[in-house]
Image (cartoon, rainbow, N blue to C red; front, side, top):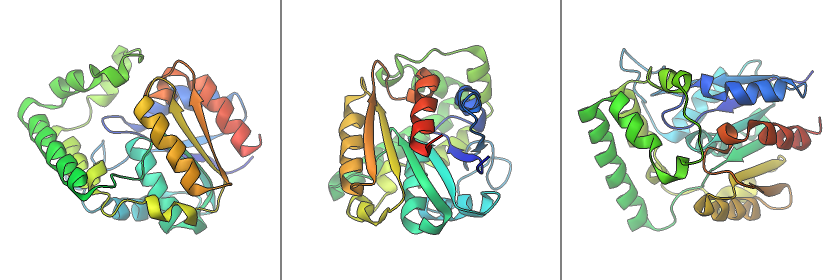
Amino acid sequence: MTDPVVLLHGFTQTASSFDPLRQALALRGIDAEALELPGHEIGQGPDRLVVGSLGDGADDIVRRMSPPTPRAILGYSMGARVALQIAITHPEALRSVVLISGTAGIDDPDGRAARRAADEKLATRIEQIGSDAFLSEWLAQPMFDGLAVDVDMIAARATNTARGLASSLRCWGTGTMDPPLWDRLAEIEVPTLVIAGARDTKFVGLGRRLAAGIGSNARFVAVPGAGHATHLEAPDVIAGLVADHLGI
């Protein structure tokens, strides 16, 4: 048995959000370790705030990976940004990478600034209305229209604090990838699988660009019928792709 695959969740999620995927992976003989990201259940102080940059977060995840041997890592959305950062700055820590609904950042400086401003506005709204009300608004977005929302999922996400979620947007939002990582993708030498839901056309384009930038050791897969949260909409499909990627 290989060391467990490290799983990094997305914004507003928790480690338990990976339970369906972990179960699907287990059926294929793959163990998985889901880590909580700062701003979501863990962080400094009672409000679980994110402290530091995305690069600092990558350093922290590498320290928390146990056992500390080269591991396979899978990141979704915000978690994919962290996983990508790890792949570039800590290549010794990884043996393979899976990126779901990920990006290497925003090319245009004005675009990055606009995204930071938008995320600041969103962070302020979270603090004003609270995490429960914000979660309802967040999941009502079109990119999640294929996601089945159940009571347990909402309850798990509701454990996140408003200040914690706001801090993750301010510190780890896409606009904070400055400079973006597109020009460094070729540094990734480990096998990399890039996944997006076929209905999520924005991230299909970003996924194709990620795989092309990484090079011959990367491939892109669009999951038919799935949207942004592909690992929640089609955990069995994702598990099969991961098993194939790992040669299991």
